[in-house]
Length: 96
Image (cartoon, rainbow, N blue to C red):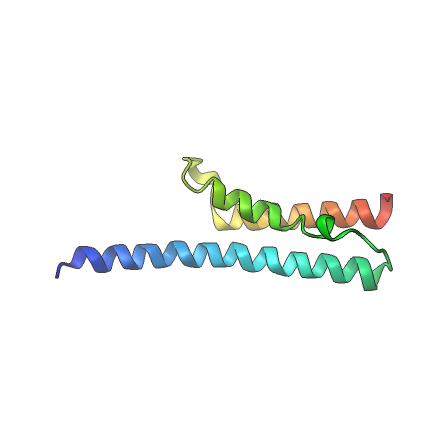
């Protein structure tokens, strides 16, 4: 058995950890947005709109095979998720 298989396994584990980080941020933002709108502001927003923070996570999954350079980091995807969440909260909490 060669060392190459263990190196690949550890490299894949790093990618899985990155995906889990982005997924955890997306899940926390989705739950936080729902709770903040419903119990914080007393707004009833459609289920589909409350799923907006999951959009950047799925986008990161679909674009993982593209070469985006240094832009495709878990930190940037997490920041995009938080920005989408804050935008949705601002729109549905203040405007709508």
